[in-house]
Image (cartoon, rainbow, N blue to C red; front, side, top):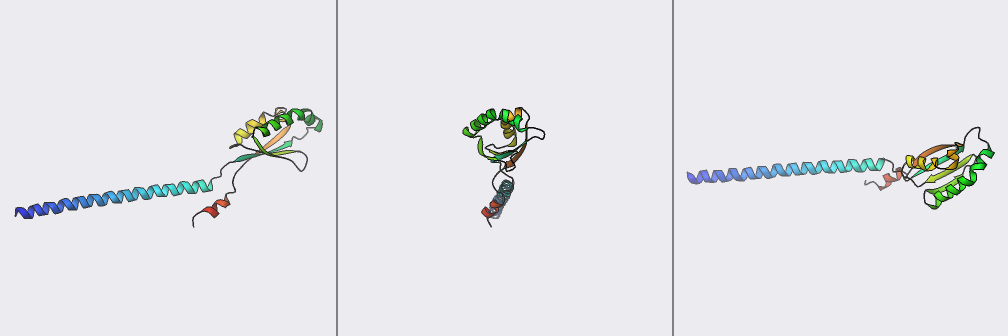
Length: 149
């Protein structure tokens, strides 16, 4: 009788250990699945959210500003713009086709930094130009080509 009780106790102990191990494994798999799902969601969010690698600034002479007003400020504007280019802040620069201003591509990661740079230039200080800021970055649809099927 004592042998049967001892054997029954051992079976219950083994069953309890097996149950504990099973529950532990279920918990680990569940947590791993949640972590994997969260990692996938973060990856998808990064794939669809734009990364700003520069800011395009479109400068247009304000209405009512004369060419003479602009030309009096141009020597100082050119010197400071060249300095920004040489320091790596201006990546590219173009004349507008309509002759009313320029288009700059600034090497900044946000519009606020681009605004700070542009506000320091003489034409902006004289309030002769309108500025339009457009954050730019990698072409998002290209990420679809890189996604796992």
